[in-house]
Image (cartoon, rainbow, N blue to C red; front, top):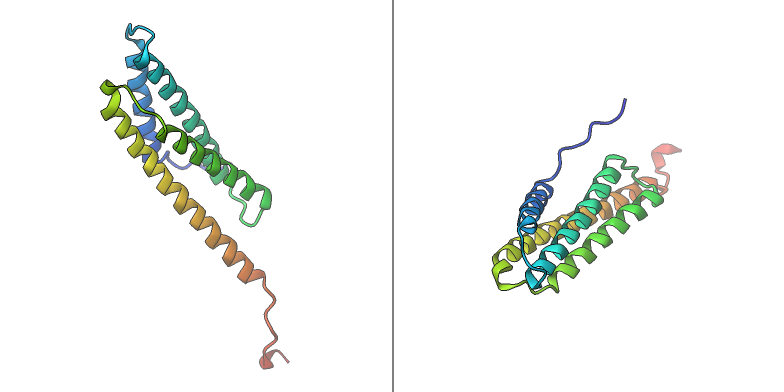
Length: 143
């Protein structure tokens, strides 16, 4: 029996809602200008971010504690997400999208906090496994 997929995180729902709004705005007959380029870039960024989050969720449901390949894959997705966040922070939006862009950055900040917590949890898990596997000196009662 396959494990039940956990519900999507709130930030992923927000990202999907923002993407929907952007697609609606992009459908408007905007001339190809700064605003249109910004919308195109944001849609591409949001899709890419959602794809990384989906892969991370899949990896999380297949967690294999202590498996170096799994850990490498998770760390790779976390690093890709960090790059996505850093990239969007360098963007200066057109004036009419400044408020939206700030909300988008707020969502990215929430994701960044999640990355930090996920990384901390993985480090704690690795530490716990190392302690469990460490040989313990024989106690006098064992003799």
